[in-house]
Image 1 (cartoon, helix red, strand yellow):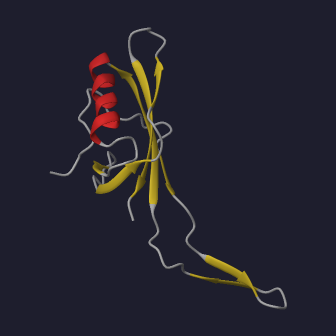
Image 2 (cartoon, rainbow, N blue to C red):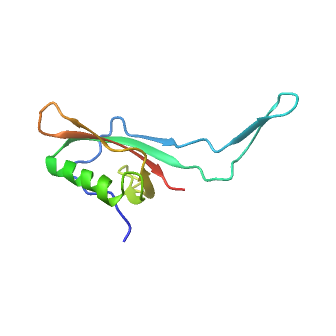
Image 3 (cartoon, rainbow, N blue to C red):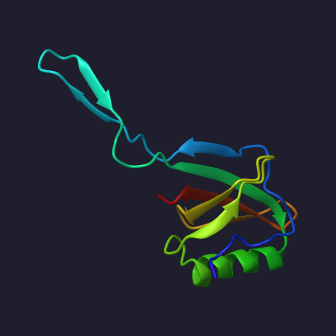
Length: 120
């Protein structure tokens, strides 16, 4: 069974939610007289997303810790993630870096910062 992003008690925060291209696949060069040349690269155009969760419970934090450490081994395995925006499109992605957790101002809940990249 494929891995899926865990269901948490909160939705991602809209502020700071971003989608971007992981890298520019364009092959660029210059002619002998200095004119630029460009053509599409051989690989797909891959997207990435950055988002965060606010006020996660201790149970949410434990769920995310288990997910990253034993389910997907940080970036070692792919998982299915559904874009929370209205499109609701599902993507096969990997964690681009370990999840980062900060304690919220209330002293009992957590903020989780997430970056994922589409799998090519």
